[in-house]
Image (tube, rainbow, N blue to C red; front, side, top):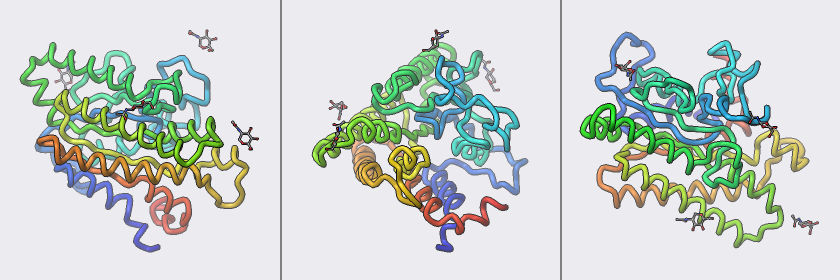
Length: 296
Ligand SMILES: *[C@@H]1O[C@H](CO)[C@@H](O)[C@H](O)[C@H]1NC(C)=O
Ligand SMILES: *[C@@H]1O[C@H](CO)[C@@H](O)[C@H](O)[C@H]1NC(C)=O
Ligand SMILES: *[C@@H]1O[C@H](CO)[C@@H](O)[C@H](O)[C@H]1NC(C)=O
Ligand SMILES: *[C@@H]1O[C@H](CO)[C@@H](O)[C@H](O)[C@H]1NC(C)=O
């Protein structure tokens, strides 16, 4: 699949272009962005830039030790990666600094805030130890209120409505469901997907009432193919857990539909969905096609 080689960079550009975020060419780093773009970031370990460092958690819920951070920051920042997060790459592309984690003491809100927490779900029960999406939303409301206090309503509203709201959440909810209800019927699975998408849609609507207009959404990745899940299900070769893949496919399609409906109902609402599921699934199933990226 030769076309795969270009996908990630190409989709990231498309993702930014469809939200009309001015992108800084990598060959032209000196150019200043025309307009400042703050990012408010929500979700799980895919987006957590270090919030879990500030919570009392066991080692498996944290990423503050070597070799995390090895290839880019050269120290463990609390990101669940050796390099940068997708939101860091987006910040770099649009010529903005990395967005600081909400719990880091003394942060400045000017460039936005990252509320994401590794292990988090849409549902609180998915992992009560970390910062669920509902708690992330409460934290965002506190930031919005303090922006109003510091900058005045007019300036705060302007910044909130120009900002980009990036979200990646849901994967942990599906892993939790599949682990806890191994014998769920098709009907129970479908009900779970429906409730999750409903709650996620409510979250987006709530952000909208606080002035959010531009949403950048990463859909749920193919969790059923992650090594930890393949190991716990004792799968062989390149087998993936088909129950979670099936639920996640239904989720991604229902969530896309729900967001599209919001666009038609809410004035000024703009969104872009990055198909993380397909990109990552393709990388897992056809890693050779990506050698050119990883060896570059
Ligand atoms: C952190 O969590 C552990 C295990 O739940 C507990 O024993 C310990 O007292 C907690 N520490 C603090 C400072 O809350
Ligand atoms: C936050 O950072 C911006 C830009 O660096 C600066 O202009 C502003 O004064 C800072 N705000 C606070 C409260 O430190
Ligand atoms: C699921 O079904 C299997 C086989 O029927 C049974 O052994 C197991 O106890 C069930 N698990 C749960 C959590 O109900
Ligand atoms: C959110 O999830 C809860 C629990 O599963 C469910 O009862 C509720 O109906 C959901 N809300 C929406 C709007 O779907």
